[in-house]
Length: 569
Ligand code: ATP
Ligand code: MG
Image 1: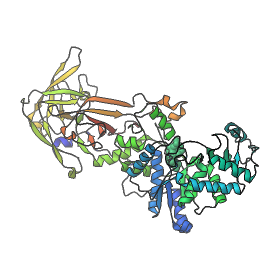
Image 2: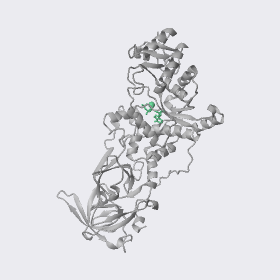
Image 3: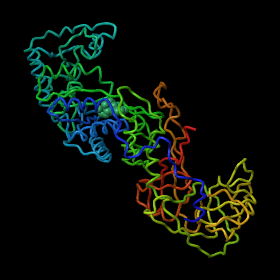
Image 4: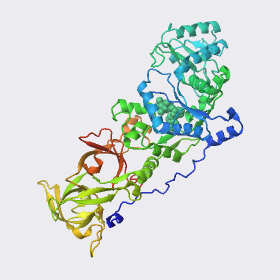
């Protein structure tokens, strides 16, 4: 290795808590429970899970946690996992969202056993509902939605029974059939379970299970004028598919009695059991499709795959790898309570991976020209550089040294602050893997802006320390004659406070400087042909990926993450 590589200031970054692949998957209460179920021969030792998103938006990191848990735990116990679209709300759902969700689950590296749709069960769900009416366990209510809300009571007060609660079974069957056939208008009636209006659990106060909705459904067309609601649909879909362990986030804890009530009363073949775990919350962002859609629709971000978003599509475009996201889910683990995770935990996962795998390159984001006055006009010297400091398998490349170069504007100071180790007037610095240069003259325009630095090189310093003096700084550079122009996009936190939802309107907490673009950046020629999605470490700058917007005419790169964590220190 040339000596200049040895004293290069940017060492590979190993955070203290870096884990290795040999670390066991952390213990968690769900695994313990399932181990016991299998030992007790429950569900014939089968572990069958599902991931059940509503196709009303793109998946985010919270979903990744749920996906890794559901697919991971089933895989561990030789079971299986279904991907199920909970598509009972046709107004808000679309095919676009379904394809994005399938793509993202597959991108994370998981394979579902069956692709399922709650809408495939609409006939069965309706038959179960008719059964409940016949058993006098469900009734058609004709109160308005406001009245229903009013009658429901509150946490302190019991609810009141609807005057329609005691309709006869025949009346209910007739009305339900008419609702189904489209003979009533939206909002006229709902089908409710007959449970207990005085229950301390509001979810048990005669929840509605069907509402009239005359919306075209992208799968069932115009067949249905009524659509089943979440709680009723979910447990029965689990049962129909033979799911054994229905894992969901904590907000469904109070819905578990209803989940069990419906199964007990309808007696489907399968007997899934619901267990709740703590949802993921991440600082400086929001994890909810309903919130994310507001950012997309208002144009605050540029689409669902905006690299600032915590969506899987956004993270992919930002340059995150599926492995780094799975590693993140492993590091945060599964707990019974909700946790707020620091952004650094996520960033460290991709940093640790790319430190090992990304080829090194040089790029200058904010260039100033350096003219090596001692270098003959047309002389070009090929220099061989390692693509990775630790992995020789990644090979070497040739970078040409020439008379005109670019360096980072911030690597030169006329009036240097204390301990500044880079280039100063009359001072020396080493160019990475090349020569030591001295700045002899600073050229400025009329307004006093530096336009060029005229330097001389010491020909005796290629791969060698200079004689009789110490040169501490090493900076990166790009040969002007063959530099490739690039737009380099740097991203910062999307929100300027860790808890944007504490704001009355969370969009008020948007960080106005979450995106900055360097439009005059230059990169080494070897980056020019890299396909979209190729990742590099730009020495001293961070990890970068070629963006989908890159064309033959203009290279566009995104910074995935800086080399070191700039936020925790
Ligand atoms: P919406 O805002 O529309 O409710 P969502 O982001 O909550 O969307 P869902 O489609 O409701 O997404 O959730 C699909 C599955 O992902 C559910 O099983 C849910 O428990 C799980 N999930 C959603 N958010 C998180 C999260 N932050 N952490 C872990 N799991 C989550
Ligand atoms: Mg939700």
